[in-house]
Length: 322
Ligand code: SAM
Picture 1 (cartoon, rainbow, N blue to C red):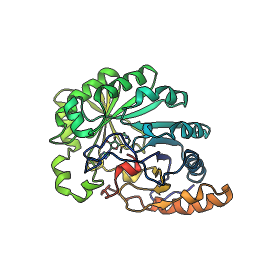
Picture 2 (tube, helix red, strand yellow):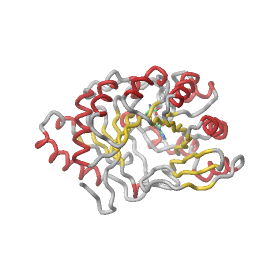
Picture 3 (tube, protein in one colour):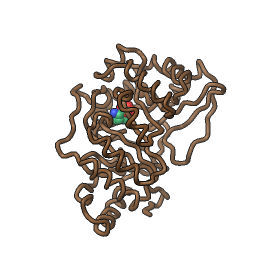
Picture 4 (tube, rainbow, N blue to C red):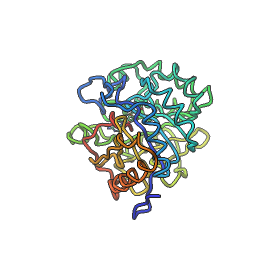
């Protein structure tokens, strides 16, 4: 097992199935153009082989499928079928929910029991302004159907001043009512926001502001969470939980166990480091050749992790997933 001097190792793998997306969210895509798949994206089998090798070489326990938007990828069924055979502790998926109702049977049959659905507002106009694609009603319907099918749903919201701060309480109440766990993600300095500090600071909403806002309506207490969890978790007695991924306010780099594999075969050990390591050429090699080479790259990827705090990067989320 590859472990660094802070005791960190890779346990959680996020695979970006495609860079293509049916949204063009303001914080992800500055020019508002819908994202298309990269021309050199790997096949479902190659990506699944990558997961299998990483399970062995890095000790990956849990897999999250992301993107781009994973539900738009024609490779999703074959990828799900291949990774289902790997005996992972958990396979989950992050989606904008637009195609959720349509893909629900596929996901359920593949053993997916946990979904993270990104949703920044319950206001249809603000939805169109932020996501620049899709339809709010489809997302809400997809979540309701997934929940009725027994899936656990976490909703990811990025609160932003001037865009959706007025939606913090309505979205929280909606999630509590429907049994979804809302997680606020502090805006990250990724992509164009890493270059444009002014735009970042104008929109950024930190943990203290959020908790003060929520405290106006609900009494809550901090709840226990796993050691390598990125989210702080809070309990509202009698109502449910919510979380905050406080990248800036309470950095979690010291306990980060995440590894990312892009749709084009690059390993990223840290969202906040410009470094990446190409593994696409190892995936059709036999195990005895692939694993030692992969292990050397994993040592480098682990060394890319920040010691303490996230500082952002010009790399865009669409490429590597959240
Ligand atoms: N399409 C899928 C979705 O919408 O969940 C997966 C990819 S999306 C890039 C994953 C997550 O990253 C979303 O929850 C999104 O809100 C978040 N995200 C993207 N850019 C971000 C940024 N600059 N700061 C904070 N969160 C961001």
